[in-house]
Image (cartoon, rainbow, N blue to C red; front, side, top):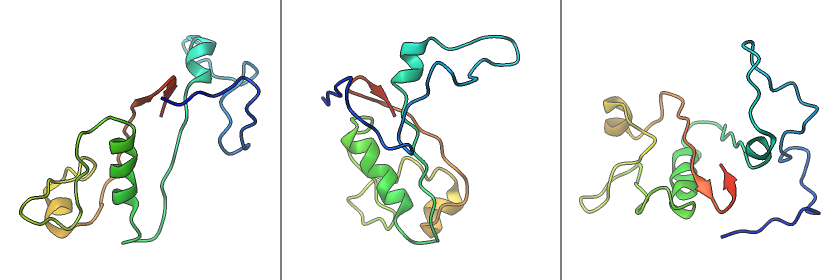
Amino acid sequence: SPSFAASTTLSPLCSSATATDSSASASGFKAPQPEIDRRRNLAIISHPDSGKTTMTEKLLLYGGAIQQAGAVRQKAEQRATASDFMEMEKERGISISSTVMNFDYGDLRV
């Protein structure tokens, strides 16, 4: 499990939210700061057929969220991907819809 020292410097693209962020909702609810600090958000955006689904499956596998990564182009012994859930996505090996997934990785929520 990863350990991130308090002194770890993160890229501005990877930095966590800070107490000065306006993270309160319209109802006035504000998430606890420790929960905000442990969150990491990733977006995988690219042209068609560039490996976005494969990368998503690997993140889920290495993060421990799934036990076996699926394959976009399936052979008989391979399982379907977790992120492609529509029948057309499964049949054609393409991603049509957006997928949002999260999992715990050590002390972080990815």
